[in-house]
Amino acid sequence: MTSRALCFFFVTVVLTLSGCESSHLFQQSAAFYHHDPARHVAVIDRQEISVMPRSENTWEAYGGNPGKETQPTGNVQQRQIKAIETVSLCKVVSSGYDVTHEKDQMLLTAQVDCSAK
Image (cartoon, rainbow, N blue to C red; front, side, top):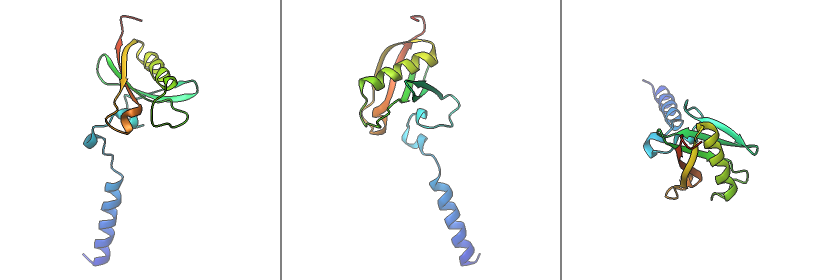
């Protein structure tokens, strides 16, 4: 292999790897990624909210934040809960934010009761 071909190969490999998604490495929610087949998008108050089932009675919601704040507000939480209830067809009985990771601070995890709605 010539040095030019080797350089081209190296650049191609680096560019390919730099485009890879690392969600499994960091165990981030699939709600952040648009290509997950289980992800739903609900529009509440003209704000897009990604909603994902995590288990039978647990759902996650991300988005609904028009100002791009880093901390969730009451309006954002209300939108996210409404989005989960709309998509899951269940009643949210408890919810909370994971504040241990900067990106996850806007990720609402909610437990639902499908017999309550």
